[in-house]
Image (cartoon, rainbow, N blue to C red; front, side, top):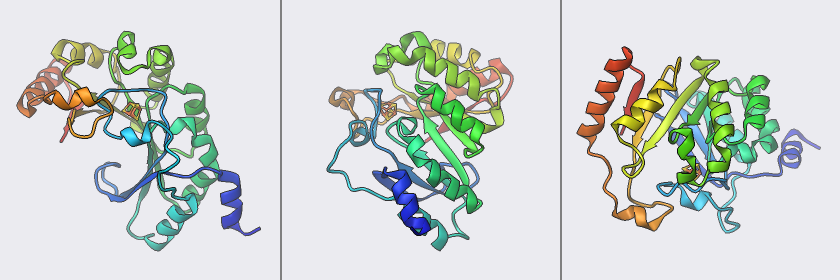
Length: 244
Ligand code: SF4
């Protein structure tokens, strides 16, 4: 069996979306971004609804195709980002793929909602992941709002573990008007201890998991800027980074 078919055999899982080049997903690097399918949360504002439920109709992308692209673009692509859906529900199937990426000297970033701490810990110890994108959706006692109430302790644990190596963790929150206001965000900021960066992204009302969200106006950018500045000033450091 050659290396490629061994990889296919071991992996048995595919990706369901692929953004071949991104300049924003891995700060300071050029990344290729692949998407897994299936999620255990139901955030109403989710803008990848087709990846939340496992849809057998979605086109499959094999890990081998992604590696071939990396080989073809070896001088262009610095990093591979895996997002979803919730990648940690399936990422163990991708261990051989992750090893192949590292063999090629590329960086790996994985996004997670934090609900599978045992897989997070296993991967975190494996040295196969260079950077984590960790969701911090709400104060943990409000995770029922994203249908993740049963995972709130798990998510807290993952965030705390990730922040033991803050240089390898980026925290992110989608700011959703029914859930967030300045006080909620200030409380969340106080829980972020030694985090290096907390990325805020404004809710977008197009293409959401819950159709009702399409009638909700996003925050005014100027309001988010003022909250960012005020909270950063109270914290005495530039923790919050606003993403457009
Ligand atoms: S936003 Fe993320 S965690 Fe929430 S439903 Fe969508 S994929 Fe799942």
